[in-house]
Amino acid sequence: MKTTELVVLSTFRSVTDAQIAKGILAEMQIESSIRSDNAGGMYPALDSADLLVRADDAERAREALGGRHRP
Image 1 (cartoon, helix red, strand yellow):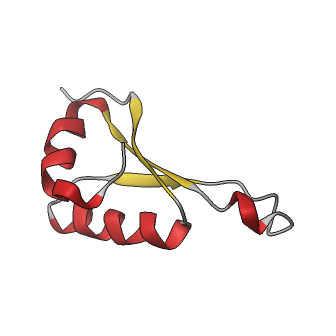
Image 2 (tube, helix red, strand yellow):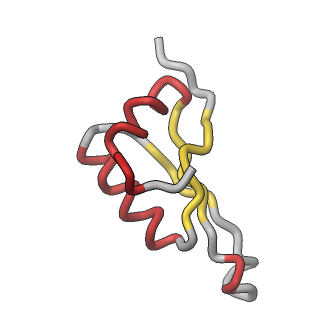
């Protein structure tokens, strides 16, 4: 049984970078989500994004991304 606990796999400088990594994980059938808050666009300098995965999938997700993510 898979756990539903989410962990931050990586933090990216932009939502776009996180979306690219999310796409790579989707190809490997690893579910993920992106968490980002730039106050509705009012603070674009805060455009970093966390890529979240289930704790059970974290190791496989790290391997899938190889050197493409920043811990």
